[in-house]
Length: 298
Image (tube, rainbow, N blue to C red; front, side, top):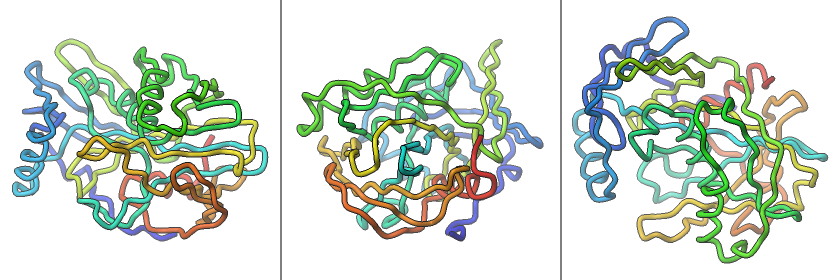
């Protein structure tokens, strides 16, 4: 599958001035070969009200400069007895950016703490959007502190998503073997705040539509069930607080994790149907797809 969007070069961005929107004011980001260095000021601001976010997004779009720090997300790869697939969700025609494209789970930092720990944002956003029901229960990924650099529990994220889904509200939880992947093209990200410096690695995508830095990881979940036995639900909420209920697709991967461009199946409201249409990806989804296409994963 060819790239649908050219990714902007982060090498052009020096001393970025970020704007409010779950992001920083006066943050500096400098890229040198192999590493992105970000300095977070002590007075970083966080916006939590949706109306303020909408206003600030409009201001950001008018300015046409500055890049949001930060967004993060992850692509979920299911390793099943009968296949290996990458999950993607389809953005409908009314989406404010990138309508009618497929994407992975991703979103903005939800607190000032997450500005310092972007991998926490990546995992929270991803498992807010994808709720996976197996015959054994709703999947809760089993990860360690070393997998994301900060102590957090994904079970709380999953339980919050279940609360909005009547069909799975009373289902038990299923602990699933999970690992964070090393992807081709990942960069080191060095985050400095006062005297503390943190280091993580991810694919670095400059999203021209969202005007933001998007850090992308890959996550593999091993399950003892076949694809048709699973039910995958959209957990993303709209502005009215209701589940968006978008279509979710399963893109086939080879045994080494290389994409084939073929959709093996789709879920709508958790109901599975075989086949489906492959679509272009959003920039962050394309960054992950291209990485897998080059080398698969380890």
